[in-house]
Image (cartoon, rainbow, N blue to C red):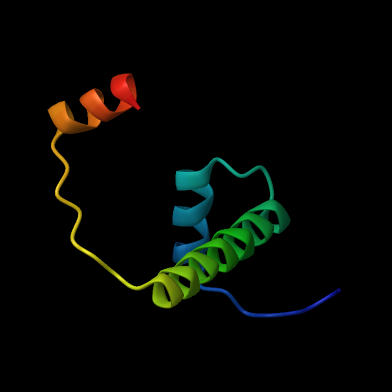
Length: 67
């Protein structure tokens, strides 16, 4: 889809520098994919509910080795 829009130059330069995207098109695609992924994660979390996770690094290591 071809779209014309005005994007803040400073914002675009910062995003290009941070992501090392080679083109503006690549940056927009990656940004949209990241936004979609984040929204899907938030919706899943909303459906699953939230619970406190009390894990220490030693407990996590023990779970990894013992199953």
